[in-house]
Picture (cartoon, rainbow, N blue to C red):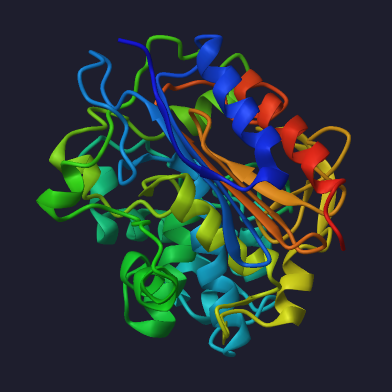
Length: 377
């Protein structure tokens, strides 16, 4: 049976639907969802293909999938909210809020350092087993006691997994809530976005599309640091109840294109959506200002905002004013305050993250670039 595309698309944004369809027609997709907002309103909401590798279950309007590091967007927004409220300060040491973190030469590491992947803890030493990664107290205790990987020097190195535990523990320390609950109460429920940092209800678990790993590309483990970061957490069965319900705020989020675009609309609208301000305009400006440009030991050359990838020759976004982040496998979130546009994309066929590497994202990025040129500013 042929695949089917469903949903809606405003005529001004039709090139996005054409790009989405082309990825399926060329056999690059199994199942996926794509959504965009403009001026805070949904203008693209598409889904199609299959929600299982056997092609017996169609991808529906409420199908969700693990989106890996796109979860970091939601975590960063949570931290920005706390910075606005004065519960955290960018240039205060993490140990101000989490005293145990000062061990191992980490006393000078600031909240800004962690947000910009200069926290000195890109991996777990020793590596975590599958079960250990799900024990919040054990993991955060280990990180607090771990020595600074670079002897206290500021070094750019993507914190793929540790990012969520460090920033998440800051949320715990200043609010008393775990990061998944804080995000749900502060953002997801208020904007009615179907995105969760972990799944605990059977009804939600039944909606998850398993990942198709048949075309997955091997990770870049030829580099010592990349191998260290990737190998520091055992992956195990991604569809096991333990992993689905695990609190791993850097990589264990579940949603679809619609929920990603809806949440990204907060940043695209300079922190205000639906009449409610979630993040100040000043904080959005700081978060999307270049904090550092250089060679990240894991990613390569990149321009970092406060955890967002900014447009650069090495790591291009759909426009010079857009910022974005993607997840392993291909999920993607894009925000552009100049055009007041956001994009969310969530596939179940595991590919390579980054619009410059994944041909599906490259096509969507090109289409978005063309659409933005037609929009009034």
